[in-house]
Image (cartoon, rainbow, N blue to C red):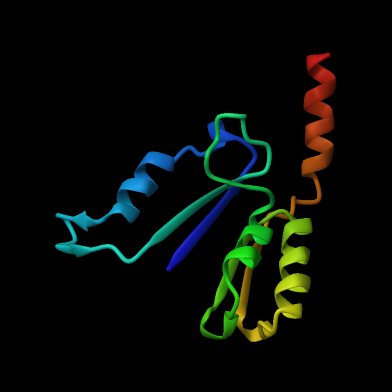
Length: 121
Protein backbone atom coordinates (compact mmCIF):
# COMPACT_ATOMS: atom_id res chain seq x y z
CA UNK A 1 0.00 0.00 0.00
CA UNK A 2 1.18 3.51 -0.74
CA UNK A 3 -0.02 6.42 1.36
CA UNK A 4 0.27 9.83 -0.28
CA UNK A 5 -0.39 12.47 2.35
CA UNK A 6 -0.98 15.94 0.99
CA UNK A 7 -0.71 18.97 3.25
CA UNK A 8 0.28 22.60 2.86
CA UNK A 9 3.54 22.79 4.79
CA UNK A 10 5.87 20.84 7.03
CA UNK A 11 4.05 21.90 10.19
CA UNK A 12 0.91 20.15 8.93
CA UNK A 13 2.62 16.74 8.89
CA UNK A 14 1.55 16.05 12.47
CA UNK A 15 2.23 12.30 12.26
CA UNK A 16 5.23 12.47 9.93
CA UNK A 17 7.77 10.78 12.23
CA UNK A 18 5.37 8.00 13.17
CA UNK A 19 4.46 7.33 9.53
CA UNK A 20 8.11 7.31 8.48
CA UNK A 21 8.90 4.84 11.25
CA UNK A 22 5.89 2.71 10.40
CA UNK A 23 6.86 2.60 6.72
CA UNK A 24 10.54 2.01 7.52
CA UNK A 25 10.34 -1.55 8.54
CA UNK A 26 9.99 -4.02 11.31
CA UNK A 27 7.31 -3.74 13.94
CA UNK A 28 8.10 -5.76 17.08
CA UNK A 29 4.47 -5.54 18.17
CA UNK A 30 3.18 -6.91 14.88
CA UNK A 31 6.07 -9.34 14.46
CA UNK A 32 6.55 -8.66 10.75
CA UNK A 33 7.79 -6.14 8.24
CA UNK A 34 5.46 -3.39 7.16
CA UNK A 35 4.20 -3.17 3.63
CA UNK A 36 3.64 0.56 3.44
CA UNK A 37 5.21 3.25 1.29
CA UNK A 38 4.69 6.74 2.70
CA UNK A 39 4.90 9.80 0.44
CA UNK A 40 4.28 13.22 2.01
CA UNK A 41 3.36 15.87 -0.57
CA UNK A 42 3.46 19.59 0.29
CA UNK A 43 1.64 22.23 -1.72
CA UNK A 44 3.35 25.17 0.03
CA UNK A 45 6.66 23.79 1.34
CA UNK A 46 9.56 25.76 2.74
CA UNK A 47 12.65 26.14 0.58
CA UNK A 48 14.32 23.47 2.74
CA UNK A 49 11.75 20.77 1.93
CA UNK A 50 13.42 17.98 -0.05
CA UNK A 51 10.34 15.84 -0.64
CA UNK A 52 7.45 15.82 -3.07
CA UNK A 53 5.85 19.17 -3.95
CA UNK A 54 2.53 20.12 -5.49
CA UNK A 55 -0.99 18.81 -5.20
CA UNK A 56 -1.28 15.32 -3.79
CA UNK A 57 -3.42 13.86 -6.57
CA UNK A 58 -0.97 15.21 -9.16
CA UNK A 59 1.92 13.51 -7.33
CA UNK A 60 0.08 10.19 -7.55
CA UNK A 61 -0.56 10.72 -11.27
CA UNK A 62 3.16 11.47 -11.82
CA UNK A 63 4.28 8.36 -9.94
CA UNK A 64 1.92 5.70 -11.25
CA UNK A 65 1.55 4.74 -14.89
CA UNK A 66 -0.80 1.78 -14.69
CA UNK A 67 -3.73 2.08 -12.29
CA UNK A 68 -5.15 -1.29 -13.27
CA UNK A 69 -4.08 -3.00 -10.07
CA UNK A 70 -5.06 -0.23 -7.64
CA UNK A 71 -8.05 0.80 -5.64
CA UNK A 72 -7.88 4.52 -4.90
CA UNK A 73 -9.00 5.96 -1.56
CA UNK A 74 -9.07 9.75 -1.27
CA UNK A 75 -10.02 12.01 1.61
CA UNK A 76 -10.00 15.78 1.40
CA UNK A 77 -11.85 18.92 0.42
CA UNK A 78 -14.55 18.74 -2.27
CA UNK A 79 -12.35 20.36 -4.95
CA UNK A 80 -9.68 17.70 -4.48
CA UNK A 81 -12.23 14.89 -4.58
CA UNK A 82 -13.65 16.25 -7.83
CA UNK A 83 -10.13 16.48 -9.31
CA UNK A 84 -9.44 12.87 -8.31
CA UNK A 85 -12.69 11.68 -9.89
CA UNK A 86 -11.98 13.56 -13.09
CA UNK A 87 -8.24 12.94 -13.51
CA UNK A 88 -8.10 9.36 -12.30
CA UNK A 89 -11.12 8.54 -14.46
CA UNK A 90 -9.24 9.92 -17.47
CA UNK A 91 -6.40 7.55 -16.58
CA UNK A 92 -8.77 4.60 -16.73
CA UNK A 93 -9.59 4.06 -13.07
CA UNK A 94 -13.09 2.63 -12.93
CA UNK A 95 -15.55 4.53 -10.75
CA UNK A 96 -16.08 1.29 -8.80
CA UNK A 97 -12.40 1.43 -7.70
CA UNK A 98 -12.55 5.01 -6.41
CA UNK A 99 -13.50 5.56 -2.77
CA UNK A 100 -13.97 8.99 -1.20
CA UNK A 101 -14.37 10.84 2.05
CA UNK A 102 -15.14 14.41 1.06
CA UNK A 103 -14.55 16.96 3.81
CA UNK A 104 -17.83 18.74 3.16
CA UNK A 105 -18.93 21.10 5.89
CA UNK A 106 -22.17 20.77 7.75
CA UNK A 107 -24.70 23.36 6.49
CA UNK A 108 -24.35 25.50 9.60
CA UNK A 109 -20.55 25.45 9.87
CA UNK A 110 -19.94 28.46 7.59
CA UNK A 111 -22.36 30.52 9.67
CA UNK A 112 -20.65 29.37 12.88
CA UNK A 113 -17.27 30.42 11.44
CA UNK A 114 -18.66 33.86 10.57
CA UNK A 115 -20.13 34.27 14.05
CA UNK A 116 -16.85 33.22 15.68
CA UNK A 117 -14.87 35.66 13.52
CA UNK A 118 -17.32 38.46 14.32
CA UNK A 119 -16.97 37.96 18.06
CA UNK A 120 -13.15 38.11 17.80
CA UNK A 121 -13.17 41.44 15.95
